[in-house]
Image (spheres, rainbow, N blue to C red):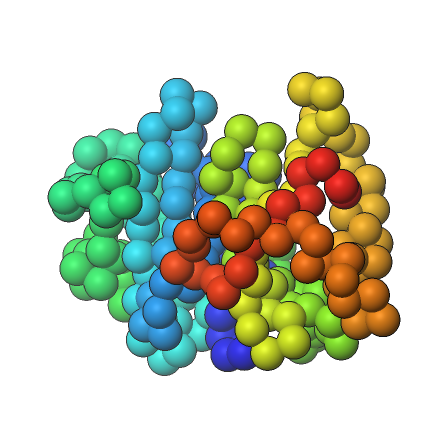
Length: 224
């Protein structure tokens, strides 16, 4: 697993629960389609979606915080109509951020006052982003490498597990009602991935799912 992608996941996670500044865009998917890009799907309250490809070449050169400024500037440009949207990919409008570097997006990493306060508090609190931790509650079992809110009430998480990448569908609701936070998602997942019970995970495989981002898909929406 390339640690750079896990850093990108940790650094951009802040825009999952809150919109990017001065916009209504939130991250609803963050995946690695290849070794050269981080693909973000942004969505707004009206249900509009746009795919944004962030080139890893700039993130590797300037540090993972570069993605924060790049995505922030791109989303701001989308909000006011100054960022051109290319032909659709996967049926969704698409933006290649590499084409915006030097104009809309600065080449160097951008730091705002919000970023400075965020870093200070996060570093002192032991945020895994700044202390070299793996994005996982059980690093010996899995590493979280991406996610996609691909269906109402369902998030597909992408995990590096036993030498391969798998997709696991997890529910956000029970009987149509959103679950409260702290429903022990990691505890349930760890129980399923336990190597002492290999048949448990296999029983939930979705054999007709075709996802190019992983080698197998498992449906836990009725189990977890």
